[in-house]
Image (spheres, rainbow, N blue to C red):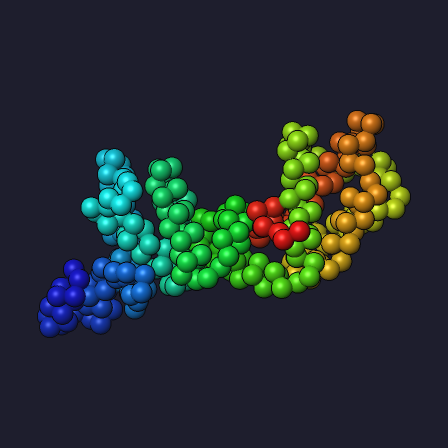
Length: 259
């Protein structure tokens, strides 16, 4: 395998996809290096790196501090680079059953998107909190969040999502029940519910300018922690549904706001 193996394979008459996959076996050798040129080469290199990582972690050979004698950080960075730049539609969770290895690879994912691709650290944290198993999907969501950030409604809405999450956590609310429309109060509460209903299933890019003022008015005019337990529960259910609807792209409560 590797460069010499690939050259031998070519001389011996192997087909181009075969000798190229052998030649590119160890790519990328750094984050500046290119990934294997063919799909076959990408899968061979990926399998080798994942096998090395899984084997070493299985027997406790985990990098510590500056010590990394088996170049496992480089192998993990290669895994990330191959999957993202090769646009491989893979779910890493299927192959990573070791929690320590999964966390190790998550740090390499953060490094790749933050330090090499230039995404802001809170964008990376927010999108990874919504799922990071499929790196192609993660990359697409990062691009969407970065584009959303230019909207004047983005930071205020992100701050509202952070507030919603804090309210739900303080109330220890984990329910996903049905919203009782008969308990909704006319005005900002009803308006927010109707906006939630009309935006369900739509991308946040198309609704952010409409949603933000409804959320702002709700918090200005409505007491979430109402004395009536049924009304309080219903309002928490509405906020939980709203948060859940838009948390598939990112956990916006992770966004650092200037306000």
